[in-house]
Image (cartoon, rainbow, N blue to C red; front, side, top):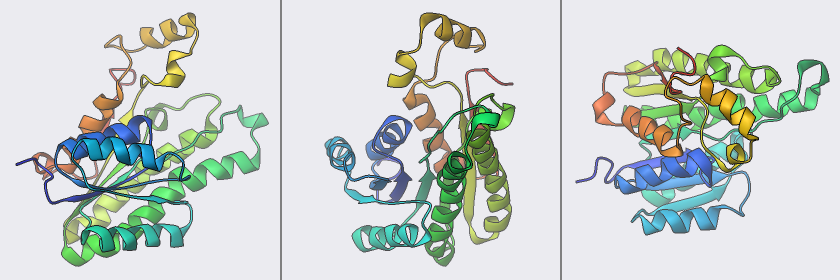
Length: 247
């Protein structure tokens, strides 16, 4: 029997990239999936891909920076599947600029989605997990939340904040049977990185011990591990999946 058969996994930002790869891994492991994105447009194609893996899929457009939206997503997931076992806080945005040029609006927008959104979705899910005294939350942080990065003050602050939330949540929720961990990806191979100039790619690869970018599956498998019974005594941990970019 697949490791997550009969389990319900909720994933934010799951229509492309890392989020979709995470959803595919859970689908192949037998889970029922509740996925969301900020817009409706990508949900149907993602659901079709996941259904092809054999998963039952519920989709909803959600503004994760809005508490009522988060609560509604959890309520509707329960109506669809009757339970909630795992939450993966993956959704995130970037609005890069040097600090002296970064607008207050761009700073707030990134914090509201990446950090506040993680807080609000977790809080909504906890109402279910506390009641049954079990559950797993996996937050997607970033290597830059650990090491900093020029031109990304808002994003770095949000991802460092996610690490802080993860550790605090683990201490608060452990007595209720809820584990909370984070994955901190490094440089991930995506359509965006494919378009980088060769010299930029070469410089990035030179800084990575394994001399390759991560695949989205590399990140997804780490998430699956932390949510599984194989990680049953791990909580409050930040799993670095960066190929040795930051050690």
